Length: 65
Length: 162
Image (spheres, rainbow over the protein chains, first blue to last red):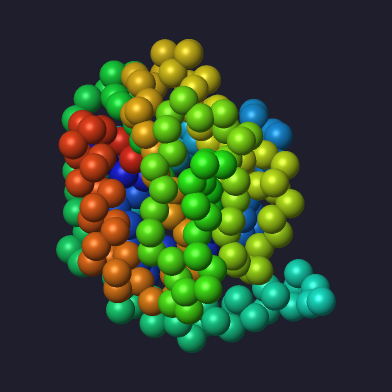
């Protein structure tokens, strides 16, 4: 099973080292960016899903809004 | 009533002092995608403390955190999900307005409809966050959910902490 996670706290993710994570600059509680903004939520999801192809784990990329 | 900024400072200080390195994943497992995403079965895993109306809420009285989980059926009406996350560290207005902010089930349904994702698993999983003492989570409940996902032949788990 391949996993990818959103990260809201870069420093924590750097220490825990999940295989694939997308760091987003959103407040805690807002991993997909904004409520009722499907377009933004889809962009975050697409960026996260693109990391599934990466096998140079741990992967920690930042979402470019 | 503290302001959001005050709480954020509290959280920042807590985070600074918390021994995260104790829970570092080592070695980091690498499982390559078994099949293209448009053929893959996907499950969502959140730590937003969501549950269905007929499931018990998470127990916020457990000092080290409630390490139980809830199975969220794929057929659920996303907006019917109840959020019982106890953390005062974030503004709950977002998830109250749109559960997809933390559990993007409607977005993944759209990806399946567009043919970009193969299918969704028949169930997804919801945990409580703010698990201060994660021993049971790491040792028991998370591996149990991983095993259930393997039994479901899930190819991809999409994780959304809050």
